[in-house]
Length: 404
Image 1 (tube, rainbow, N blue to C red):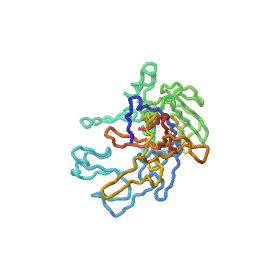
Image 2: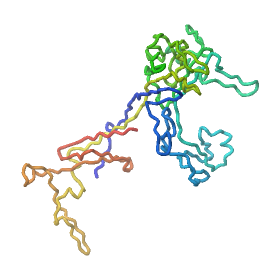
Image 3: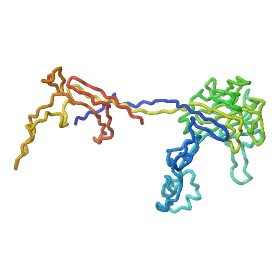
Image 4: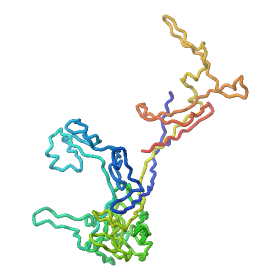
């Protein structure tokens, strides 16, 4: 076996930036991610134990249902489902859903379990003009609490250098105050878009009884969303936080004279009601919504160039490399084992004639390239689709790529 060392220019890592498309269709209290259907399994419905609007982390427990098996694994009752677990020890490692009180109540060595599927989907929150953004705690008790919208105040203000409309409170020419106007907040988990939402890719469509009544896009790729179709074309309807995964909708003008159940009472379609049918028990049966965008995914790729030089790699230990005959057998005796050192190499050079063959030339076929670490441990094998013919005067460079 021949071993060769990669040179500095033979191995490099590059980053491939991709922009996977994301599409959510929202209708009648449900969301559908990238047109994924709800599939029924032989044992579970839906088969992934979550609906098509959710991403399921790890995709475990496919077509499984919780059912007592009558067995226990340690102190845990086995119900036939895969579950995550940790053992309580001095490292204080536990699940995010484990409270401090329950963790402290466990003994060291106890098994702490959680459950699958771990799922995630988009969420919609509506803030009316009277919805409190901040709740103060009673005197001497706690520190109060803030809404999800108010928690984004500093983040929103940090992008003011891009556009003055990135402001929470009135500032300069912007008189709008997010504490006192109607606001729709759409939250998009990072599992859907990766490192950030691609700038300028957000596209919102508002439908009423199947008819498109308004559309909004980030026309200038600065995060500001402008209506591009409808009666108020060109109007600013909100903005997008690309790094954080939020769409903030501030336009409360009527998009149509029709009404639907966006709140406990009926109201006209408005941009602040976009996606309203997934906010609690509101179904908005006459309205549907489509939100499209592109994520950003950085995929690293390892590229290696393995050289097969001229004049090398033309010897093989494969039994088919030598010409077979009874004379090739080793001589053995009571005290001797002697191999034939003049075994003839098989000539595989083709000829126009059936006999004899062409002029002899050492020929091997490369079918695999092994990758070894510094300690000569085999860590990978690259295979070619068809063995590559290697003669003395030929050299080859095998390009090996591996996604990290």
